[in-house]
Image (cartoon, rainbow, N blue to C red; front, top):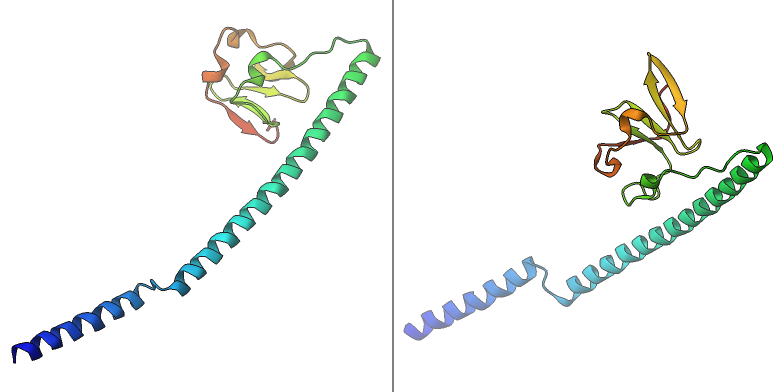
Length: 152
């Protein structure tokens, strides 16, 4: 009787463990499916990155051409070429082409005209130099927002 109980317990254990393995899909087929999904995901991701890199490259060409045109315009008008302020080349603003808004000071930096737009006597004013109330501030530490258009 004791041997019969041991055989039944062993049989139940073997059947239970095989059912558990099937329920968790720990077979070779499951790993193959998982691997195919992994490869598919990463190929899709790599393709998206290469499309982004091409897209980024075309933007770079566009901005280089725009900058050359601006330099020609400045030279033709007899004006002085003015590049962006030093803070604009910081890590935080790198590759942003939108307007930079400083909400605390209600001031915008216009990267296309390379100047500042701010309120003075309840009228919006453009100035190529930084407004006096912002001189001496650490621009990199200020709260900023990037905007596609000036909401003026």
